[in-house]
Each structure stands twice: as C-alpha cells, then as structure tokens.
Image (cartoon, rainbow, N blue to C red; front, side):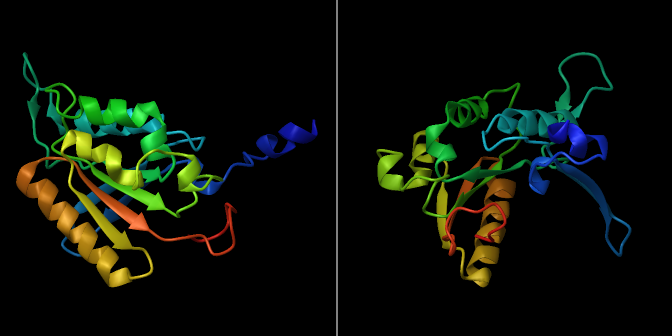
Length: 191
C-alpha cells in the first residue's frame, strides 16, 4: 500500500532523530566513548526512564554476587526535553522522582530543555501554570541554568558548568536552553 511503501525500502517516514543512533568515537589518545541516542518514535517523553536504565545498567558491575557495585563515571545520561513536555508530561516528574532512589540513581543526569517558547504548538501561557518551563525541577532541588540559545559561548559555558556540577555532587542538573523558532512550528526548522 502507499502507506507502507517507504517501510519496504527501509524508510519510516519519521524525523531522523526519532530513530536513534549508536556511535563509537575514538579520540587521538585511543580513548573510546560510546554514544547511544535512544530510539524515541514520538514527541512524548517515554524514553526518559529507558535512558536512565541504560545509564544505570552501564554503571553497574554485576561480576560478583550480591548488590552490584556502581561506578557513576562509566555512563552519563543526557535527556533533552521540550518546553511543553517537561512540565506537562507525568513521566518526566516520575523520572525525576526515582532519580534519588538507590536502585535507580545514575550519579546525576544532565537535563536540557530545548525551549523554543512555543511548546509543541501552544504558547506557554496556555500550557502551564508556572512562569518557567523548568520550574518542575525546583521540587527536586535540581539547579537550573537559564541560557540564551543564540549565544553559543554561553551555551558551552552552561554545559561545562552542568558537567562539573554533576561530577562534583553526583546530582541532576538542568539547562533551560531558551531560543525560539524563527519560522514557526516546523520539524525541519532549526530552533
């Protein structure tokens, strides 16, 4: 059928970043870093606890009997949220809530809100009761870094600060990357 023709050729018709990816990056000193972009075939945040589970599984040494030994430096979870999804989808709050529990703690996750001030298709005044999309994080004592997406150096500083915070305190940190979509809501637009 017309709808499945693309699938027969290996295409899904979905946007590329929904399909996930795996890559091993080798630096000059031969140190390897594995990057795994989890498959998330929707704008929903169901992938968040899956990514946390990936990170925790990579951190746990299960070579001995008993409770596994955790090394939080073995993997880092980075979650990218939409500005409407972060406060609006319950799975985000559930993921934040379990992050401090012994069996689920990953030594801190770096959360990034790709905040285009539009949500998916709704103004923020019609989609949440708080001033900032990041206000949910306050309830979990997660520090929030607000940064202008049009200032690349400030964005790099925010990421560096977030990495240092996670490394020092082994806790979640949130970057609220505030930008806008110049041409409205369009999957191919670059926020």
